[in-house]
Length: 257
Ligand code: PEP
Image (spheres, rainbow, N blue to C red):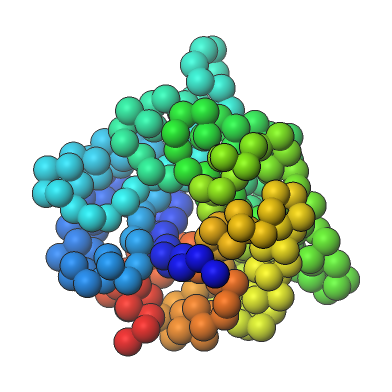
C-alpha cells in the first residue's frame, strides 16, 4: 500500500483581509515546527485578495506551508467579469484549488458540468484540485448518501485522464456537517471515503486509487481529528471554522500527539 502523506488544509472561506492573512499565516508558521511538516502537509486556502500577500510571505520567509485558492474560473482568460483564472493562480504559485465546495454549489449554482470544467481548468494550469463532494441532510436521512456522493465524484472526474487523476485530492464533506458543529462519526466518514477509493479503483485502477488522498471536511476540530484520522481511508482534513483559530488548527495538524 502507498504511504499517503496526510494533508490538513484550512479553508478560510470569506474571512481575513490581506493584512490579517499575513498575521495569521505568520502565527501558523511560528507555531509549526519542522517535524510537523514531515508528518503532515499543511495548506491554507485564503480568499483571492490575500493570495499575493501569502505568496510574498511564504516565498520571502521560505515557509513550508502550501497555499491555494477556494475556487477558479473554468476559463483561462476573457470576458468573464469578476472571475479569477487558473493561469493567474499558477502565476501566484498556488499549489491547490478547492473546486465544488458545497457553498459554491449551494449559493452559486455550481453543477457537475461546471465543477468538471473547473477540474479540467485546474489540471490544465498545473494546479491540484481539491474536489469537494458530499451529501445534504435529506440524502443522508434517505440513506442514499454513498450513491449521491459517488455520482458527484463521477461527474467531477468526467474525462480526466489517469495521469491527472492520480494527483487529485478529494474532500468528502457531508453538507450537514459543514459549519454546523456536527461532525460525522469516524465510521460514517470512513464508509463514504472507502466507497470513494473503491470508485476511483473502478474508474482508473487500484494503484491510482491507493495514491489519492481523501480528506474529511465538516466541523473537524482538534478533539475529533484523531478519531477520524485513525480510519484507513481518511488522509487529512479540509477545515473551515477551526482553521481561523491558529492554536486549534495547529492542534489538528498535531492530531497524533
Ligand atoms: C469547509 O468549509 O470546508 C468546512 C469543512 O467548514 P467547517 O470546518 O467550518 O465545517
